[in-house]
Image (cartoon, rainbow, N blue to C red):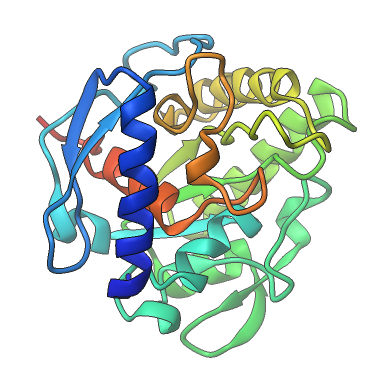
Length: 255
């Protein structure tokens, strides 16, 4: 992250800390400064079984983060737009459609931009080319309020199965949908929590991992913390740092 962005984010976060108790502590991964973080847990959702839920581990650091490819919608695109990963805005670790967003409808046929060639391919085609070690999938936000559970689960499973067929050694992590701020009215947090419970079920059925990132992005009432968001929905660099910290302290095979 650029220094000016980090300083602005740090100031905003300091204000946030004065207003809320802290129960989770970690350290900032990016940049030249080590920044202490404190998080307040959100309202609880369905707790997955131990063999699905990624539990707290030691910090994996930049090495663990570099092993991950992130597949998602516009909320994932922020990792590229704000230069949060290796190679900054030119990172090859973010897979999103050229538009920056991705809906729940027919996900296995939607095209993402494959960074190495700047060509549009399906997620399965990208997986066949890249053979990523770890793939973190963050999808479902665009459409969760408009479809029934059966359709949501079916489309998600089709996507996972297509990726597994193309890259059988890839470890897949389904990340919880992030909440939205109290000021955001286009989708409800009730719908997001419902969708996250569906994603837990999908993780169990597909025998992949579930990452409950939403718990460190929300306040005690379950809303996305305002300082973490640019518009009530998408994450600021500060919010993205919190997300990445959570990922690095909930590793696959970690201790």
